Image (cartoon, rainbow, N blue to C red):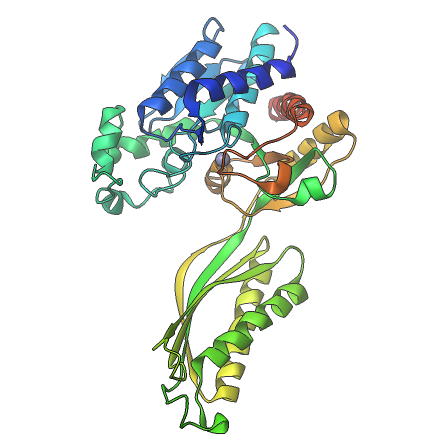
Length: 413
Ligand SMILES: [Zn+2]
């Protein structure tokens, strides 16, 4: 049975019919529709010489035993956000089904190959993304907090999980799944505009951005808008406004994909008759390189200090959240590049803004790479999410080539 990329497209449409409605995909993790999707996936692989297993975190695994116990993993997630798109997550697992079919047909592979459908990548119901992959990676450390999480209807996370056979405390036992993993491959839609703007079907992902997220608070003095002369004001919003414009220059100077966003400013007292006393800004900065990320942050801090001095106000920084950049494996990046050039002629290397299950697997020390396929209009997490069918087919072919090359590399040691 040769690889049949058109079948992947047909199966993705079948899945959309089965688990979507007029508003989009409804495969939210830990729901009946999600179980329907998982059952559908199981049927697609029935009849192949695979061992199926659901681990302690709810991840679904299919194993094709090879000559060596070393493993090449192909992974994705079949869960979606509510009213989501037909490809986010599902493309990876359904394309993986096609690759596993081709491999199984050709007899025992040189190394063991496993397909994994990660549980709850999106975190749509309980606000905790990358559930199954972080459990398997051993990086899940928020069990106590997760116990308190409830969905919109007040159902507690542990209760929802146990309905699907998962015990929150036992989830970390999924760690043993990565014991023999020697390579992890994931195909995903880009969910952004870069490949489309370059008129390219496919790209290799270098890693996921590191993120620095801060609340920056400027503090001045509330004063009457009528009686306070312009040169006597201590206007907190002036500092915030200068910083908002300066972060563009900082991102530009740092370059190489640096992005800085001031996503919100709350001013107090926030009335038309008063100078602003406090301006609380939300600042998000991202870079693929840890040193450059630190540079983005220190430049913004220095600029904020300068503006505070100029405006005779104070500034304070508070970190909300941060994560280091996660880089993918150089050798696998080369193989992915080759695979893309073989099927599509031209390749491109780009970072990923969003986090993916692949980032968790890479964090666990498994050599990892991702392929991105073009997203039309850069849209995702909406039913408008789409990719040209010819590009989807090229993506299946590229994943298949990459799997072949990764197997050969792992087998060669
Ligand atoms: Zn996804």
